[in-house]
Length: 176
Image (cartoon, rainbow, N blue to C red; front, side):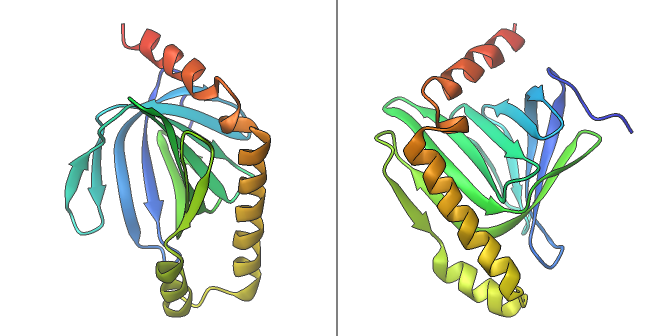
């Protein structure tokens, strides 16, 4: 199956370590796809939780996924600046128009001033015990959190000045 190119729509599916579906984002527009990265955008997209509940995203978002990083980055454009929500996750795979990854609970929330908080450590510890995460995985995930923090402090990748704004402008041209 041929993977989708820019301007195509994709579905994002997050799973848990045990293979159970966690969350689905219905429509995300691919802005750029390379061998290792996918940059997408969505606005007011339908999200379905594993228990069937649904909600709609409140603001435009630029999504950054990498095949070699154990995190993905969502830059949300709000009136008072760009907020980032980073999922500590497996690297993604793309099957047709479906982007898939495993969500490992830990999240890094980054504020417009580039300060950040690590979230959901209790949930991670519970799932680590329940799903028997191997010690090697635990080590990888915490190393990737440090890598992610380094990217934030260096303003690297999706945290570079203008990155989110540039891709959001491209997204707007696709809506015409």
